[in-house]
Length: 230
Image 1 (cartoon, rainbow, N blue to C red):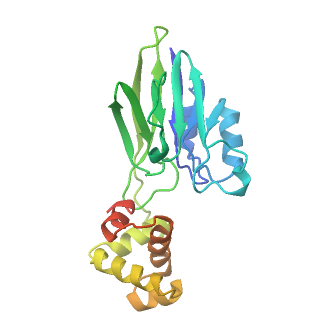
Image 2 (image 1 turned 180 degrees about the horizontal axis):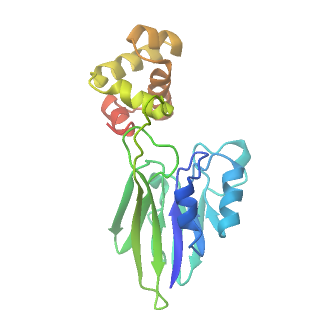
């Protein structure tokens, strides 16, 4: 049996639990938003790694391919970061790998398995930390094992990560109203600190909403809430 690790959206963080699981793999497939070359070097030190460039992989990844087609152990893969760029013609493909949304997805489309392993990097608000392990038999049959890293509650007296702090800040608030207000203020080109003060939210939360609004043209307040895991 052969085992392939399928990960995405590490955003500069390779968790020890993920690295440990990947050490049992023959190859690693990364769906993009790696964040830096050091993560890619570390992955290649564990197993041969095939990766695509994500929208957050900047100058360091300028020579990295945005799509990869590769056959491993008789299974033919097509990889891209954002599924909206998956071509309509997938002739000869067995499995499609993608990322970007940070949400795990596993489905068949016209007989082809589509897998988004979710994100195994920094936690985005309430979304789980996930990746996948693909086990391939010699007869080319395969099975996917979804892997999820349990959330560690913050230790007493520790403020936690930026994501934890923002998550705590959002609880019990009318976030749709706040997000709409931040979107209007962003259109007016008001600075992030001023937006934060005006809406009585932290600079970190204001910055997160502004970034999602500016990097996803046409997104609605509901869409931003979805991307924030709400």
